[in-house]
Length: 298
Image: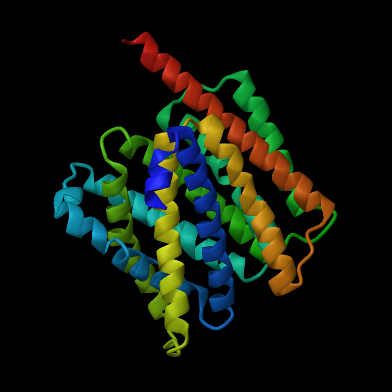
């Protein structure tokens, strides 16, 4: 099976790994939603990081202490704090609104990341990106529907989580210039685990024995999803893999319907599609511009 996968062209392998990424993240969100009904979401977030860190054991067995070498420890810590804010808000909001709405709103994170890159990193903003951002945030409004429906606390938490993830994306852009994806993943686990433990202690409830396999699966799925995504974008161009991320909305809608009796309405689908399309366009456009700049400097 592995040999057949390795024999595939790089683009096909990247696209396959992107599908795996969508399945891993959707599975993680589904199980976190289920566990969030039995345990405090803050505690679920902590166990996601704890078991996710343990899942990195093979990395240390293979590379030893090499992934720990870094000159950007402070930046890794800042990324950990931002991502912890995302996770605590996301896991809480996940238990409060339909799974499809969570996924649709979560697509807005790259929009916030693009906006923050302009503000914090001084990136140039061109008219095409402005139009994409305006359309993307219009999609967010379509899902939230302020003025037509009361905006729920859960939806606001997911939007806040998207802002925090947008900040995380901005930090990752800086780290990616010098740090490998393995080093970033390792430090993500090392910082997120103790940071999320602190708020979890204030609401702590000891899990029942039957909960631990589910909590372990949440951590493993989350870590595998991050590794699969990093490898997917390494093997194939963004234009090939990013459109497949829309599968998350399809998986979430199916799981929400069959497990939680949730039926997303047309506006949620429309808003999610607009948000996703805008975010994907910005990501693909940035990738092309980066390649063009790299070619020009050779």
